Each structure stands twice: as C-alpha cells, then as structure tokens.
Image 1 (tube, rainbow, N blue to C red):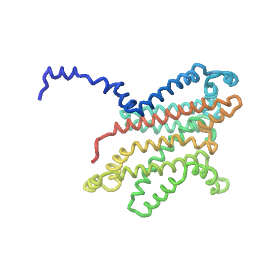
Image 2: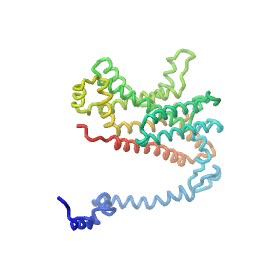
Image 3: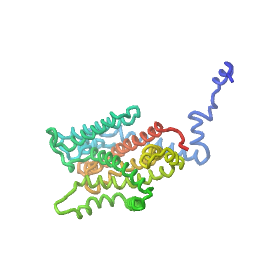
Image 4: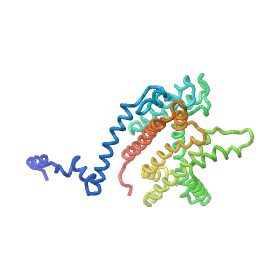
Length: 367
C-alpha cells in the first residue's frame, strides 16, 4: 500500500513529547523516576558541584608541571613534576638513555600493528606477515646482538615495555593453549579428559601470586646445578599457564552452548573431528564467548603488575621507586593517578576492540 503525500507530511511533522524523549525525558526516566532516586541524584549532584571545582583547581591551576621536588613541596596543588621529571625512568626503567630509542621504537611498532588489527578491512595475509615481521623486529630491538646492536639482557627490561611484552606474549600463548585444554576436557579419551580437568581445576584453585612465587623461588630448586632460567621467562610461563586455565573454561562454555544440530550437520557431510572443529564448531563457539574472553584478557593485562612482588621492574615497580626517593616523597597520588590513566587506556582499548569484533563477526542466530 502506498503512502500519500499528505500522510508523509503529517508523519514528518510529528514530534516526540518533550517530557518523554531527549535529555529531559532521559533524566526523568533514569534520574528522577522516584522519591529515593530523586533525592540520591540531588545529593550526588551537590557532591560533584562541591568536589569537581576543587579537584580541577588542585590538578590544573595550582599544579606544578616542570619543577623540582623542593619547589613542589611549596605548592598547594598537584605535583605532576614527579611524572614529567622521571618519565624516562617510569617508562623505560634502568635502561641507559642511549638505548631507550629501541624499546620506544618497539612500542610504536606494536601500537601501529594493533591499530591496523583493530579495523577488519585490513585483515588479510599481509597483516599476518606484518605481525610476524614486527615481532621479529621487536625481538631484535629488545635483545640486540644482531646487526651491530648492543646486546640488552632481559634483566634490563623494565617499565612499560616489560608490561606490554608480558601482556602480548601472555595473551597470545594463553589463548590457543586454553582452546586446546577446552577441547581436551571434552575429549572422549579418559586419559586426556581427566588430565585436562586436573590441570584446569588445580591452576584455578590457586592465586596467580603463588604461581609467580613458585616460578621464581621453588622451580629453580629442581634444576640441575649451574642451570638457570631467566626470571622474566619464568614469570611469563606462570602467567600463560594461569590464564590458559581460565580461558579453557570460557571456551568450554561456548562449546557446550553449540546446538547439537551443528555436530549432526558435520557428521552428515562426512567431516572428521579436526575439520568439524576447525570449520564449523570453533568459529561459532569462539564468537559466542568473545565478551568473557576479553574480560579475562583485560584482567590478565592488569595482573601483570603482580610481577612487582618478584622484583621485576614493570611500570608499577618503576613508579614505586620514584616516589620512594626523598625528593619526591609525598607525591604518590599523582604517580598512581598517572598509572591509573595508562591502565584505563589499555583496558578500554581492549573492551572497545571486543565490542567492535562482536559487531563485525555478527552473523545472526546460530539456532
């Protein structure tokens, strides 16, 4: 049925009621939809009106940005100088200044690769090759000993590059290991099934701190005399094994959520177990569990700060070292606010990528 011109004009002239839509309608529905909520909204607004101007005054107008610690103690505002004057140490740790261009280049290269990975239109074989080449370049820059570059030991790694590398390699290795464990837990072979169950439940039953202590203190006791393994590698292995167990349970939930008809369709086509999982089950199951998986990866990113307890100088440890100096004592709030912003940017970026990935891979209901 065709709509006449007069009807279209009438529909175009209709406007939503001003008290039910727009900002006023939203506020009425969400902030003032009852006596209790209205009182709570007024109290919160009053608190914000009192606190925010003072916070802005402390953080910006009375703040010191590029002064010494002695001058900071004489100001009433925030001392952002504790960050600006120690930014090299906070970001790069004890690495000599003449070598800091190498981790800086590595981080820039990593961010460029992540930027192109964020947009699905760039997903192609060339991007995979770019990631492979980028990781090789990052390894060469961070270790040296090649192409005339001075060698850097892993014990000299610190600050933000160490945090990013622990996160990158930890998540990259933990995810496929978690998928394998999830498939093993659903295996029809009793030995494989119960071995995966024991591993998953054992790892999930202990905190990450205990695994880091075991990797750092207890594990070397079982090595032959004269044999040592780098502390960073041991911490990285503990992080990988820990989060793989959690990812395995998330993936198992996705596998159990698959309808039985998907398996029957694969059997009717004569596909074996490997092809069934690779072509039909896993693509759909992994898509279903994107939100909880990214939630685990976000937690893993934040938990890399726990390596501070085994004396690894990640960005949290370097920041703590700065505020322990007599010149900068009393300005820990500014340093931790700076760290909070960095961690928020990282976590928000991962969450944003998760939402975009869900939208890009949405193919409708599988039932």
